[in-house]
Length: 419
Ligand SMILES: *Cc1c(COP(=O)(O)O)cnc(C)c1O
View 1: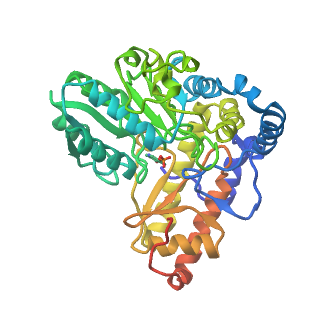
View 2: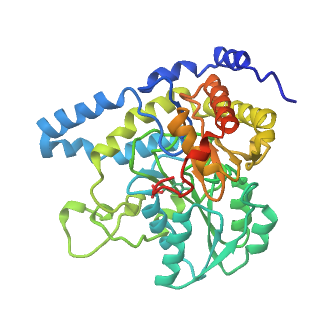
């Protein structure tokens, strides 16, 4: 049932929004700009500049090398906070390090090396880096990629996955939320199916962390990676996280034998001898300033709580889907995400043959930033901590204006370097 879809209704939803006060915790430099790309780069938390200034001036400027005595634990401390508030993992199972792509390589290589099997199952519609990393891994170290064909709008079907699983499979690599459609497989079911044939699962949580409640321990997850710059608002290129289930940690060896994984790191011993615990998945010196920015960002997520974030996100998703049905379908748009909110993450994809030019017109002429994804998708990514229902209503209204005036036809068809 579709409810009232007027602008007044949107304002009422904002009036009842228990997360409304969190918008003030972010820098909103241009109140007229509607930012619906928090799924690619979250907004700047208001507390971040002062905190970074403090770390730079006091930690670096005054403390100099002495500050490493404190800084050395930050990756683990932030990892434990993520584990507790965002990922449903135990202390000592999550740490921040490197990028998602590099962590994916480290964990996939470790899983493959520890197995006497050679098949890695990958979704053909997964985020490119996941597919490329796995392709390169098997090219260099042997093994084969087995491709899963998931529906690009509705996501992975459990039957397809079941059909791809057998006793040759070492590892399954999947995203918890599809970057394009937002489709969400059932993590517990996938883990169970993989475990039945003796395979491990490596989850990419980039579009899930901070947007949907993730329960790594309760769903029996083995391995996971994800970034902190999307719904976690850690800033451009902030360090990623990695998760390895406790019992697996001593059994897996990652391929990059850096000194941060070493037992008695400062003994500077002759040969690599990694610690038994999670630090063995670290490589080298963390990018401290980028790591620091995760701290105030995570504090906002912790205070709001992922359950409340998800509850608002589901309401926002439904609002966008209903508005799209009422106003955009007749203008040539089609929903390209699962209809069921339980199977959809925080963003909604809408397909239109001219999506790229429409996306440009929205950004350049109408003050609405969302993004385009191949082949013809407009991704609407509200972030419950700072997006309002009124903004969603206005964004759809401005989109109708762009379509009705055909102003998008003035924009180039050629894709830009970054979409
Ligand atoms: C954003 C994203 C990444 C990004 O990886 P980087 O190494 O940070 O560039 C990886 N996987 C998924 C699913 C993503 O959405």
